[in-house]
Amino acid sequence: MKACGLVVEYNPFHNGHVLHAKESREKTGADIVVAVMSGPFLQRGEPAIASKWKRAEMALNGGIDLVIELPYAFATQKAEIFAKGSISLLESLGCDSFCFGSEDGRIEPFITAHRILTDNSAAFDAAIKSYMDAGNSYPSSAAKAYRLINNGDAALDLTKPNNILGKEYVSAALSNGFSIRPYTIQRVAAGYHETKLSKDPIASATGIRKAIHEHQELDPVSSYIPQTTMNALDQYLSNYHAFHDWEMYWTMLKYRILSSSLIELAEIYEIEEGIEHRMKEVAKQSSSFTGFMAALKTKRYTWTRLQRMCVHVLTHTLKEQVIHNDQPTYIRLLGMNGRGQEYLRTVKKGLPLPLIAKLSSYQKQDINMDLRAAQVYALGLSEPYQADLMKREYEAPIIIK
Image (cartoon, rainbow, N blue to C red):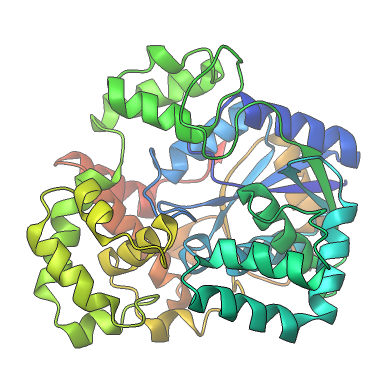
């Protein structure tokens, strides 16, 4: 069986994701589609709107055959590390290909960019440093540096989030000599960060989340998500009485910042250049997460990077814990359908990493970071719902459709 891998967050699963899965299957000729999906906290440094279990259920109802979890050590990272962890897991699971969305749907500019940047890595890094020293953010600096070393040719626009991630996916596969083959399809309709909902049935996850949080109901987004997603979100709200967002964690984050010493904050992953001083001062004066972020934001640090710092503070993730996690060491299964089960039977014996279907069967310490993140994520809910979600992490079996 041929498998195509997708790197996803499904926050939540929407009509664009249905199209992505369908077109990826067709373009690669795959028999099954595998999704490696972020857990409770995401690449942009924010809590997922619903638990990984509910999002895996949405995916299986929407055309995905097998869902595995991207560990916290990779899910809450800059694009390069996020991509390396994701593609490594898809390679380990025996996927023949992976497919991502990009601005114009051609894979050649990504392969060319990888070769140019590999051949000119020293010049690229020096240019990035120069632009950042001038006060530019890292994404802006990287885009400017690529144009510089490519003699002004910006065939691949690295200011676009999907292109940034796509470039790193391709680099992860080619740099490590993986057998998995890259493909891309063109994104349609709403952009990655688009917050407004239009008449088009494909909207960004950002816009969908914004509407859900603003209205505190699902009717305004009903035309942008499959009915199965609508049902799953409605069930989640009934079960837990809340959708997750940063504000429900603000009190915990503020406590962590103010109760930690400057030395303790400096030991947290991604806290650099003395920003712990600014975080403490701003936290004292802030009454909400949104207000805190607005006051903390500077030209040098993107909103996303600051949010990731906050996630690591919230979960008490130390530098020393993350730097030793340069490769995934296990494959955690979240859910599958009949085709996914059949595929696993064919590859299971040859997997280079342990496959975790039941948490109690895996006793190694390398999964502790994921478990801590899941517990902190559950703490955003009120009781008895937080206890119920924590219990789900340890006792419930994988989802089988």
